Image (cartoon, rainbow, N blue to C red; front, side, top):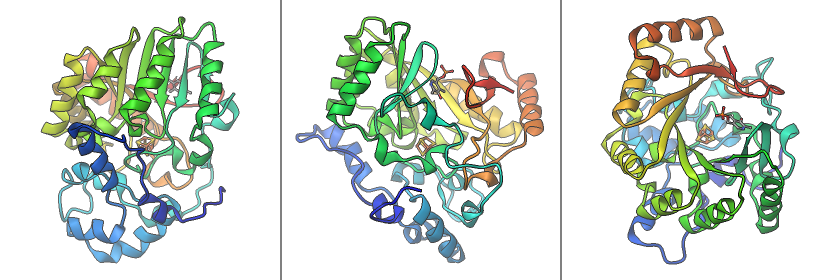
Amino acid sequence: MIQHAHTAREMAASEIVARDSAPDRDSRRWQDEMADLVTDPTELLALLGLDRAQLPAALGASDAFALRIPRPFLSRIRPGDPRDPLLLQVLPGAPELEVSPGYSADPLAEGEANPVPGVVHKYRGRLLLIAAGQCAVNCRYCFRRQFPYGDNHLNRAQLRAALDYIRAQADLREVILSGGDPLVLNDRQLARLVDELAAIPQLDKLRIHSRLPIVAPSRITDTLLGWLTGSRLKPVLVLHCNHANEIDSAVRAALQKLRAAGVTLLNQAVLLKGVNDSAVALEDLSEALFDAGVLPYYLHQLDRVQGAAHFEVDDAWALALVEQIRQRLPGYLVPKLVREIPGERSKSPL
Ligand SMILES: *Cc1c(COP(=O)(O)O)cnc(C)c1O
Ligand code: SF4
């Protein structure tokens, strides 16, 4: 366990974004949203008209892994409904504090595939660059809920070492900016990073793994489109959306801008009990994604991280669900059901 000077709940309120010194109006808007996250369980329950009996559990669980929700996401949660599929993804609760056998702090053994700080290199031809330790939203099922974020916040020298490592991998074609959420970095930081990557000749793709376009679509600014599509690297954005209700008109508009700029849009979802573990929910998600210009890519079986056991869907039911949606949807709207197994050379199909 990492020793923090403050509890996770206190840290949630601190700034997660390094602000531009002179932001334009678009940048100010998303950066203001990031500075105004809902981080207090008392406020969350009050805003949604939920029973205060849940408060002690929410406070306890948010001490271990902070509550953090951008307000645009909050507005898509149905008030007064404790079973809302978006609420369940973000509300801390007592089951997180139960210790479950078979669940661990580092279920993906990423500690072992960390050649230099900030780089996770497990698969051939592509690697993860942990560009930012923070996220705009804290998803309760996240496998990084136990991850030593602090250790992976890159300083200048570490970033240089990570780029040196990338440069030395002759068979690498794609760098995946991951996190945390890489889009909590500001556009100046990201533009500089993309310049460095574009100068590495063996790379031809730039991939971003981000939940920000879903939870705070104002992040998709013209400045972002500039660095994302302005280099010689082909841009791919893999979103993370688990339920059709996460896609509202603001999200659709942001995704439309990305599509129009030539960004390939894919989605990965996590199969989550109570959230999207029905054929109807998965079918609606695929259709809503397609309507917004996004193709479903992966449907992940949960990584067995301590504190997330209550979200797990068993493999037999997961396979049955995918079989049901395969019969209802065109093949391109059926995501690949996968699990990440440490030591494998790719995600493993179930
Ligand atoms: C998931 C993952 C990738 C990307 O895998 P794809 O199958 O190409 O989407 C790359 N590196 C690591 C360490 C990963 O966990
Ligand atoms: S956005 Fe992704 S990395 Fe961040 S908390 Fe959610 S699941 Fe975890």
